[in-house]
Length: 145
Image (tube, helix red, strand yellow):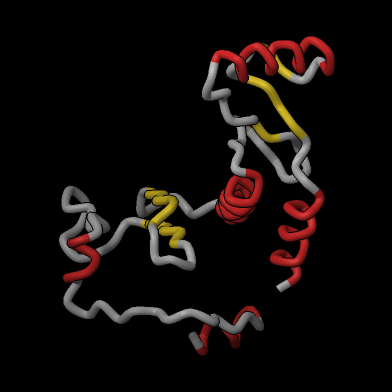
């Protein structure tokens, strides 16, 4: 942690676990046995404030992580939690989100009418909405931390 601070000026505000015998790495499937019995692959775990693993990325040992994608995933998780919607493929912050599918036939009919009126979707199960301002502002606050 000190080395990270000295080299980048960034203070790591979360615990880092020492795994001297590799027991934790083996339990999480981080050892690439076909390459090495001791070296770990490059794993990224995104764990929310409730302790739930939300994303696991596994990179080969010889491929570096792509930090912009990791940040985008965190932003997408924050957005979907706030809007109760989904993000589509290649979603970026400030883009529309995918509305949840209607749960009733009446809801389906209302969605079709809404899409036809606003031209914001392709069909009843794929329509879009702009995120609420509170969700956009919440992400901006998180990014400034």
